[in-house]
Image (cartoon, rainbow, N blue to C red; front, side):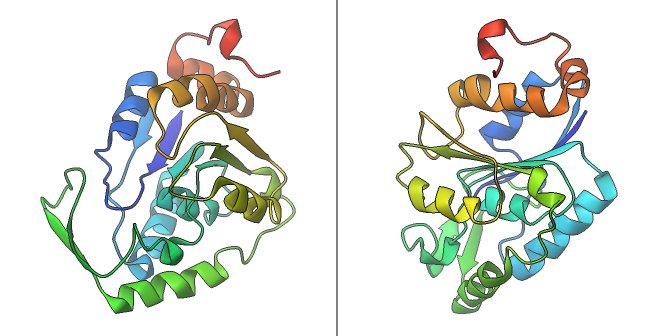
Length: 211
C-alpha cells in the first residue's frame, strides 16, 4: 500500500502523525512531503506529487485535509479539514514564525505575508471546483466534535454540500494515536480491504472494525 500524508499548517512531513502512520504500516510506503507555505506553490506541488506517486490513499489533516480534498480522482480522507484557512486569524496571520517540526531544507522559520493571505483566499474560493459524480465517492471527511481550531459543525456542513461521506468522532483538532486507531484505521480497512491488511501485516481486532 502506498499512502500519502498531507500535514497541517506550520508542520512538516516529519510530524508525529506521519511517524505514527509509518509505524502502523511497516509493509506499506508512507510518503509525507513538506508542503510549501504559499498555496500558489503548494497546490501544484502536491498535484504533481500525487500524479507521480499514484497512491492508494491520501490522508490530510487540517490544512492538509483542505489540500487533500482537491486531489481529484484519488481516494482520500480529510481529517478536520480547514477549508477557510484565511479566516483562522489565530492560526494564519502575517508575521514571522517557527516551523513546528523539522523541514527537509532545514529551514527554521517562515514568513506569512499579505500576498500569501490573498493567495489562500483566492484558492479557497475555487477549492471545490471540478468535482465529478465519481469523485464524490472517493472523498471521506472525519470531524472531531471537540475541535476548537476549526468549527466542526461548519466544516462538516461545508463538506456535505459536495460529498456524501462524513463522520463525526470524539476528539479534537489534532489527529492523535487514539483517534488513528479507533476511527481512521477502521475506515481505511473498509475502503482498502486486502491492500490495507497486507500493509499492516496483521488484521485489526474485531472491536476496531466498522459495521
